[in-house]
Amino acid sequence: MTSNRSDKVSDLLKKEISTIITNYVKDPRLKNINITAVKVSDDIGIATVFFTVIGKSINKSESNIDKRILDKLSGMIRSNLAKNIKIRRVPKINFRFDESIEYSENIERLLRNLK
Image (cartoon, rainbow, N blue to C red; front, side, top):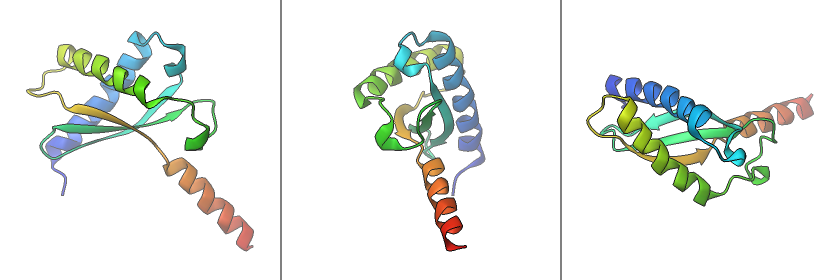
């Protein structure tokens, strides 16, 4: 069961990470990232950031974002979060492609084919 505090931290991190990507990221490959959700562990030690790529296909296989780029981005984001928000411990950031849109498109296509 998630706590109210972790939900508040998730919302704050989503807003701040989106702002950091918009204002501070210079890499053109990362300009089209859209943060869809942030899930924080109960001890606020790990934050999983779900993202999609704006203007690209919703399929993970067609997304051209490299894991190494996101790992470097997470360090920069973490240091900016430490400066911008008042939190005792800034969580470790893990990026994951948000497959929920792809999943819902697949369900819709299957339902249309049933008719």
